[in-house]
Length: 213
Length: 213
Image (cartoon, rainbow over all chains, first blue to last red; front, side):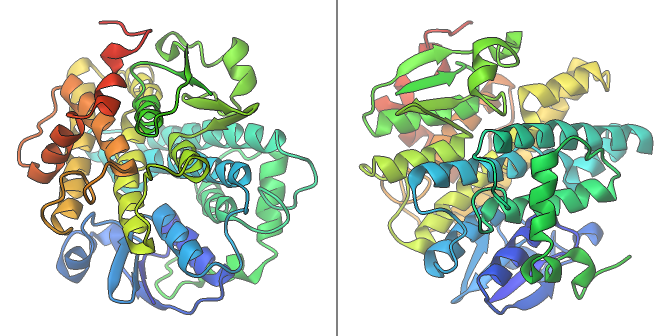
């Protein structure tokens, strides 16, 4: 397997965690999206949506991090990234999408570029935007966790799921932009639990071959 | 089943289509999100993330449209909203997420409100924002369709999938905001094919009990 990705892309980080959790080896192919390398050249030829990550497996190219994690879970079922029961699966997917569909898209690199280049926002206004959506989104995430049975060490149940694969990169981003993470006890407890695991630590941006400070 | 939703919410429209495709009856519970009815009162009590749609089934409440469609497909498998093979499932999920994670979140109501209230954008700038993300997103969608075998009447294969459930509401929104839909032949062909079906037509915003002009 090959993973075309970028150290700082949180969608890439999700898939790196999932691959590690499943114990799958992969070649790390860096794509420098801050420099625009995803918009032309060899990467654009394999990626119809010109976004990272792209997983290469058996000659096929797969895009969209959530779809990739589902694909991995279907083709390499152990250990599972989703519970076995439909209600549990719906809960984990909803938690995942609370990050992947509500927080991250509004704050990704191309949106921030639009804010600066087209709307002429200064750093203060851009950071306020970023922090607003992180805070609103994580508060909604916390409310969802609070409705689940107490005692889970991870987002859902006692093993890491797709929701944890989404949460950890989002918290990394939030910390990088100095977002307020107070008052999110279940969320931050899940983050801390995940960061005890080698699968999460090894996948973090600073450990990637293309990492920059 | 009950669906808490709003006629103009495209995430709600996705689930209405999915329920119709599967032939499932449901009670339509309107939540007036433009008026803020999702942020307080009875809806906030059942919805941890305070977003529509919420599906009620067997006393459980489910949020996030993509997670709800997956839940329906797992608990009511026929007719399927995803292909049987993992590669096909990954393609359909990636197409779905190209809309649900790339286009729609950047243009949803709360983001547009932030643009107007916090960033003081006028209508021209707000509409330019809207049209920009729709166009960029649908061009990426079209490129993905163009890589699939020719001859599909729908987004993927010969039956409607989750990707069509996402596409049709997005095109409705694009038309409402007068977005440029030229040069998207496969995308618009899939849209037209879907709109031949009662399941898609019946679910459209103008047919909802809470529809406003």
